Length: 299
Image (cartoon, rainbow, N blue to C red; front, side, top):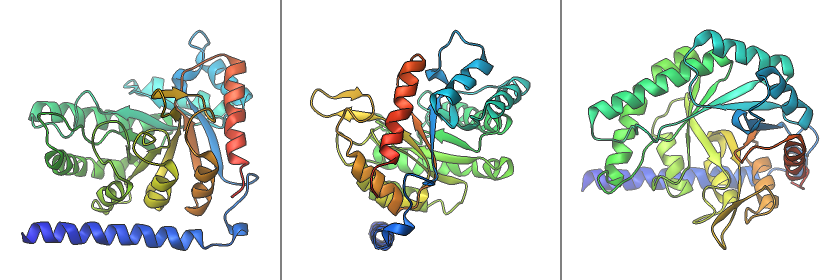
């Protein structure tokens, strides 16, 4: 009973802190929240969205030409020399690789089998080293997966325990581990998401918020305002509730004016990466333009 009471108190403490922080930020005068010009919001795309038939240097040049300011790599590049070369090409083009989307579905850190966890930890370690070689300072991690066999509470405790073993390496490499809200039946509310991160009490563990992933059961602006200062990166997607389908940015049910206001209120400055299907130059230019429209929305 004492553990349950303590847990409830901690949860309420986190909730109160999140609400208070959001209220404080929302009371700031409009002039201090930033406008589209000089907003500090950077447009990025995923590397696998760029045309696969182009040499790497031309891929980055195309991203820059289309209006993007950074790139996110999906997966691990274990060859250190190759990763460093790719990172150098990206920087030369003016689209540095800012993060690595590792995932974690294949060997979840919430799995009860030691051999599965060992594989997941080894994968994350490789992803962090890959990020360092690429010049990136963030690795996206799916923290846990709740299943018929893995209960919610077990996933919560086990994933935190295993992630903690990665934090010394994160500090050594100066690469932040960013847990993302995904369709893993885990961390289903922004209050719980904030609590989960706060319990690490470590500067190398932050949040990666996807503004499309909660639309079936929540609202992006609420997640942004609640998770707030914990956010280190943002994924941009859009989703239409009717028909349950992904759409291009601005074509779904994400309330983009509210999202833009929320970004200003929490003082987010950094990369916003599109996680959509790839395409040619016309498609990518249009996509960058859609992000420009979002950034230009009133705050």
